[in-house]
Image (cartoon, rainbow, N blue to C red; front, side, top):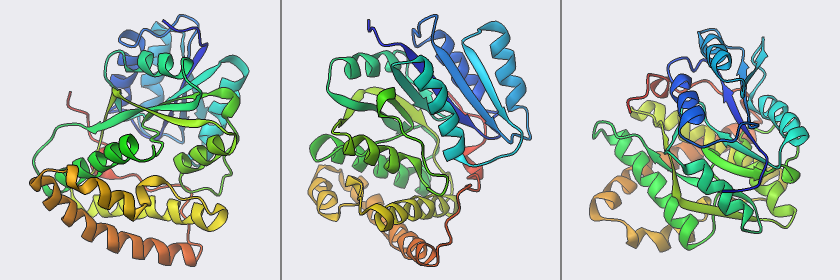
Length: 297
């Protein structure tokens, strides 16, 4: 057990196919306390997301929708969650609307956070099993490298599922393109560590075709380059020396798909750098369509 007063935050844009599974798991399989607030920002949704969230609210008053009539970007949605969490909780658990924490994973994060001097502890993201397509195999290797670097070198915060001390929360500037590196920077600047708990697992969606994978990697690189330009901060997974040091931990098959992924990364990086230099920073991301179909559990 833990003694941390907890809030859960979810940012949702047109997630009617996925968010019901997440809310079902949060309300029944994570042992969240009765006074926990599950804050769901429904941002400019044009599908049935709001209806799904309100149905859960009718059965469990811990679920609390925050409805934005117009989509205003993830930074704005997170800031609304931060404000509510700082008023009522010791820790904020962030989870993606299209992700699924394994049973008990949130409790593991909270216990680890309570017993450590970390400002945030994050779970291990593992893609849902799907076909053995090229895109899926590349994404699996990307997250394998993320795991190895976080364990052996320096943790790079993943926002797919993480628990953050609310005293560490600061508003995210609306012009920031990617939230996770900014949150990590803020926490490190306050003198707190970034904790990684691979025993806590969250299943995540991944692009299922190369075009969507490229789009996804380009927007991640735009966010990293923007933060580098404005603050000088680099996340550990962009450290080429770290990547080379963990490559020997991969299987021959993983090395092959890592090589294919590297080719995509180089092109995505070059295009992202061009966009960053021209200050063409998309603050509201276009959804990756192949990650928005129903989750198969």
